[in-house]
Length: 312
Length: 305
Image 1 (tube, each protein chain N blue to C red):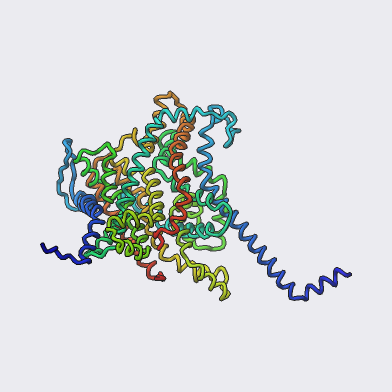
Image 2: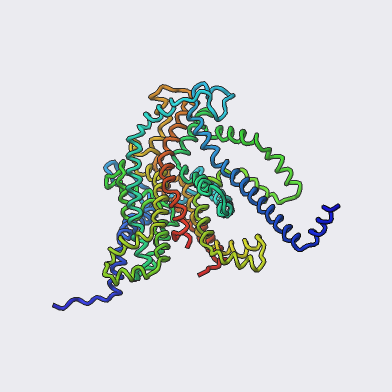
């Protein structure tokens, strides 16, 4: 009885409404969080399941692949697939030259595109609007439109079957998605306070000194964003690699596309089911370097995008 | 000796030109020239000489006429690519905005989750996709692509009985076109997730750039979550929706079948003129779509600054 009275008293007191509000709010929040977790886990599953499949199959032995009872977790895991793919991809040397190619191109892209973006952001000169419209045109018109002339041009310069054409394009700021990078840098530099440069100018710093030693350092978020995008896209690019007929031995992506036939020819494995296991190992080996690079840069990258001018 | 007088403004202008010089040279040498050459090629019959040059033989609009009347698959490929693009782009935009809002809430292991959602961008390699496709084709018995697709369709059909749901919604008299769109969207959910990595990153950045005071005001005025989204979040990310839409359309186009067709026409069939005509036609259409989309979205956009 006493408890009942106590409850009635509490029911009529203003504290009851407060408590009720708090409980409703808390359960609402809990429900939202639950919904959020379910959605994120679901989408993450859709993204990860093919990757998990590839990784797990790359460890399958012959017996596992023939055994219908084996699902995802191999019963007799083997490194044989990786050994085969490693030698057939000529992994270390190919990866070395791929990384050299990717990193060099990224360096050129970051340097040139940041300069151009800075030029558009901070200087007034005649025809500026028109020239910047040309940058937008570069973003909008797909690079495929100009593939044939590029092919003909570099063919007549006898630069086919090498990585030279790509370097040339990057140095001249018309490489893979350069327009986008110029745009990002331009937006970012426009957002930086002008006082920085004025202070540098008063202290007697020249334009180029100001740019390299002060502005580029301040533009770190944009630099990181462009670096990650450029690294990833350059690494994954097949379009230019195919167009300029860059030799298989110098690009992992090119090497991968002939892996299956090489496995068949060199290791004398004719069963396509087994060949596919080697291909999976090759895919894992190809993905690994860029994944590691991304994970190293990741923390700075997400912060970087938030502050780089892409969205401003 | 009197020093030559140059005003500050001129000096700055010269420096500005110096900064953009490398790009300008490249743009003139490799871009404008190439665009001109593409149009020129498309009006000619092009023969590659073994020595290294090429020869042009003017045929007027012949290549364009062939593209639309003579060529077996071009029209079909173009229509398929365009309709795929039109279906996918709005879905990708809304999906990535939704996911960005989901990921923008405070939670544990946000870094890990964001890394997972960026994974498709890391893996979006034509080489990897092509190699796996090839392996799948070989598994399905030889080089006929259709059998692999059928095997895939059969296996995915086992999980969800699509026919049942189609009948279910058909009975409540939804217009067939809406139903088709929804069915199409559901069946390509995996593709859409794979294609929206960069967009999610951009939208997260956009959401972060909205000043928190706006949300505070909305909260004090008593706006519900729903109202806050439509009255604060959505208008504020609208400009970024334009950026993202442009990016998505260009990206979708560069991975479409038309581009493939243009590539094979040039490099395996050595029909360079026709290939250029394909490129010109599809680029013009893409640019027209882009212009339309940007026009319609920017009419409804509110610019904060």
